[in-house]
Image 1 (spheres, helix red, strand yellow):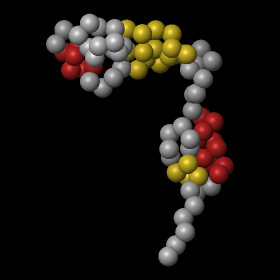
Image 2: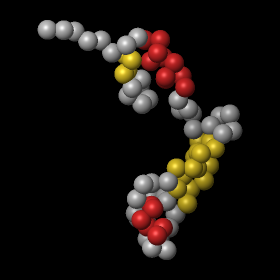
Image 3: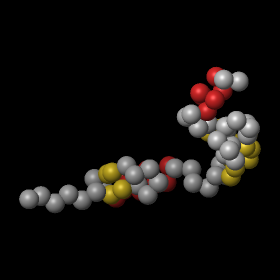
Image 4: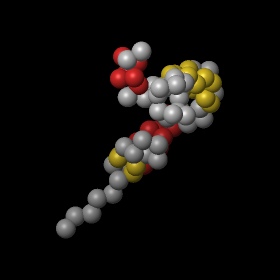
Length: 76
């Protein structure tokens, strides 16, 4: 029998052999994000946005689009 010990990032779930590496991983995730824009389409999953734009406290922005939106957009 063997015993394994892992340190796991609380944000992404990556496993590390030591606590320092897991802590660095956790610190590198942007966690204080603010939704600054949402886009909706009437034929896309009712009540859910087709894209969400978020902004970090440093002012960096990123737009997220659901995977299945690609199929919806092709029909427009």
